[in-house]
Every structure is written in C-alpha cells, then in structure tokens.
Image 1 (cartoon, rainbow, N blue to C red):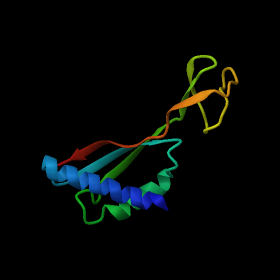
Image 2: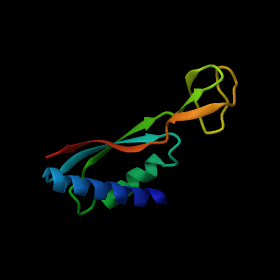
Image 3: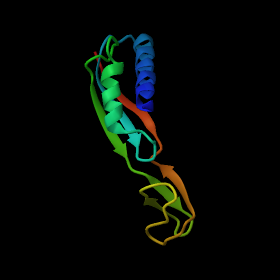
Length: 113
C-alpha cells in the first residue's frame, strides 16, 4: 500500500510548513487526487489517520477533491475527458491524445490554527 508512504510524505510536508509558517495545529487538509494518479482515495484516507498521529495534523479533517482525467486531442483540437490512458478521443475517435490532467496529487490547502 503505497498510500501510507504518500501520507507520511504529506505529514512531513505539513510539519515543515508548520515550522516555517509558525502554526501549531492543522484542522483541515484538502488534497487534489487525479483519476490517473494511481492513488486509491479510501486507502489514502485510512493512511492519513494513521500517519497524522502525534503530528500537528492529528485529528484534522481530510477533504479529497477528485480531479478528472483530461487529454488534448490532436485530431479534433479539443480537451476531452478520458477514463484511462490509452483511450481514444470520445469526440472524433482519434488515438492521438496527450494527457493534460488527472495525474496530480497535491496538497491544495491547509486550515491551521
């Protein structure tokens, strides 16, 4: 379960920011998770609760924003939603797509005290 190591990295990032920005407690963490990021949101939420114990983020609410997978189609020159890598364009059936969104895992915002 690589989500646990991702959670530990997120907690390290939060702890660094707590030191730099001088806050003592995080009450909410908002993460953006892309559909193509290979991250399971439920597993990440479980790992988050474990990883935050004893940290400034212990007890923080975790909000997950799911980011859809998008790609630029060279066939019809449009941005389209895709379900997975390797999909054809849903508008023109072209196989010439470049993924433009949905790969991210980002700490979007922190609510701190």
